Amino acid sequence: MAKGYKTGGRQLGSPNKRSAITENIEELVLREFNNIPAYLDTLSEKEKLEFIVKLLPYTIPRYSHKTVDDQTPEIPIFDQIQIVTSVDEKERLEKVTAYEKEHGVSIL
Image (cartoon, rainbow, N blue to C red; front, side, top):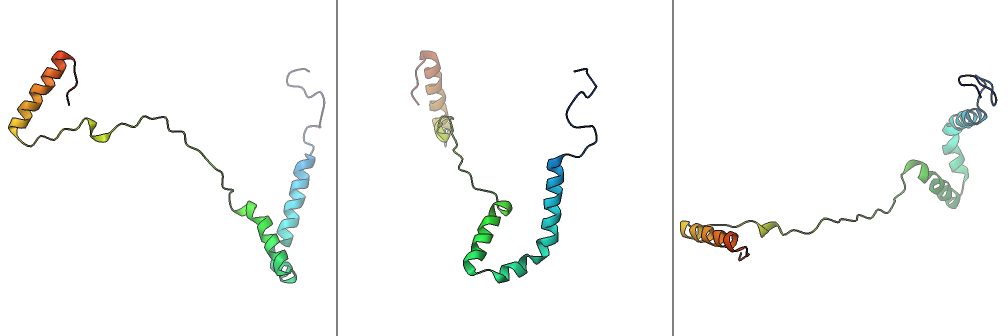
């Protein structure tokens, strides 16, 4: 097959059969759309419900189940927060923190 030259298949510019069918169906639906209420009046209650149920997938998106796999570890929010209410407590906290760093231990 030479690049840029059509060597088989449909001739350039000829209509696609599927497009023609789709257009014909669309025209039919548009012509009959205004007659739907009259058709519904001729149906029984059960037939009306079946008709509506058949149309629902075209109007309302289907519900799909989704699962969330959250791999983030749970970290306590208050693990790193320390509330100091007085100067003495602050000094003691600084001493404890310094001791932890110096000896490589965790007290608090």
